[in-house]
Structures are given as structure tokens and as C-alpha cells.
Image (cartoon, rainbow, N blue to C red):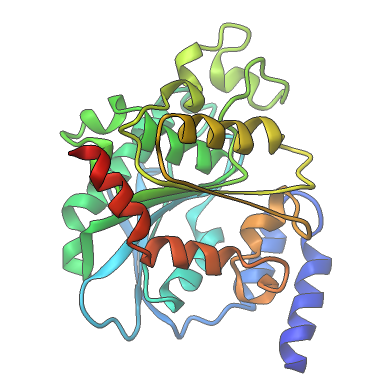
Length: 296
């Protein structure tokens, strides 16, 4: 218990503010690798950024649920290796994690990174069985910009259609501190990514809500200074419920925009039960039963 408390204090002190490479390196260094078997650098496309890592629970027994995870970074930065703690956390709960890179600005702009997200999800739907995954229990999840990617794949059928699939391939989706309704764009780093001031209206996830959407778990921090939780998380949840979609909506007091995803890691789990809620959502059949009834 003392070691866990010390790790929590150390990691919290180092994390502060927006997540950067050094704090994530510390979190990963404090995270055990004993819970998973990792297969790294799998290509799901031709570009060097179209690569993913698969984290399989070390004691896997039978086909497991699968979560494809996309990190944040304002669509300007990010590296899947920095999110090994997400792979470890999910694997420690018996869930196969697929942590994927995607192309970012200035190499690409909207909607190319959404195409990458759909391509990674399609890879999982078609290939995850050889890692012990159950493609019938496939989820997509993301934090910040990654939550946007997840939302677009789950809500806008155009992207998976290019891969011969529909959002019905997803059992559900999970958004952590996601931007789902952000026109007009205020963040200067994001403006060129979405062609500001000529941002396409169809770039907003909230514009694609329909009765056919898969169930959602939406989590945010009350004290999020980067993405307004009331407009984005609460606004999208309201729209989804209005369309008859099953939604679980949660907010935490002790996390910020950055530490919400960091709370998944072993050193910072004391901040909020993010991982517990993700596990419950993934392993619960209640949301899927609601979704299945809508499909009839």
C-alpha cells in the first residue's frame, strides 16, 4: 500500500497540466508489463503512421472483448508507444487492447485521420481473432482528439463504409474528454487541421447522431479547461438519448483534461474509477441488448 501511495504521489506531481512525453514515460515506467503479451508495429495501412500494437491478456481464457484505442494531441502529435499504460490497463481486466497511431497535421488534415481510425477498426474487425479476440465484442475508444476519431467512426457511417463495414460492427464506443461540437474553432493548433474558418459542418460528431448509433460511454472532467464538458460531452449525450441511443454519462471532480486518461494507469487510478467504468461498459450486455432491439 505504501508503494502504491508513493507511486501515485510521484506520478501526480510529474503529470501536472497537459500530458507530454516525459510524464507519460514516467507513468509507463511505473506500469507493470506482466499482465499482457504484446505484438508491436502491425501495419494496417501503407503509411509509417498506420501502425498499431496489440496487448493480449497474459492469462487469456477464451475469446475476449476488444477495445481499439486512439490517443489525443490536437491531431498534431502523439505516439502509440506513450500509451502502453492503456494497453496494460485493459489487458489487466481481461480485455484485448489495440493501440493505434494515425496520421496527423501537417502531413494530413480532416478527414484523413478519421479514415485512418476506420481502417484500424476494420483491421481489428477482420484480424483480431488470430490474437484471441472476439470480433462480436468490438469497441472503439479514445481520449480528446482520439475520442473525436472514435466518435466519428461510431456515428458517421461514411468512414467504415469505405472498408465494407457499418457502425453496427461496434458493440459500443467510449469517449474520454472528447470534442464533439467545436465550431467555431478556438484552439490555434486545431484551426488549420479543420480548414478554419471554412470548417466543414459535417466534421462535427454531434451532426451525425442517429437511432442507429451504437451505445456510448462518455466520460469527462468537471475541471476540463481544454474541451468544454458541458457543450461537448453533455451536449452529445443529450442528442444521443434524444435519438433513443443508450448512453452512460460520467463526470469526475479530481481529474483534468489530461489526467482523465492518465487515471486509467496503475499509478493514478486513485484519481477516478475510469478503468472500472470502462471495464463495466465493455463487459456488460445491457447496452448491447438495447442496441440490438433498435436494430430489429
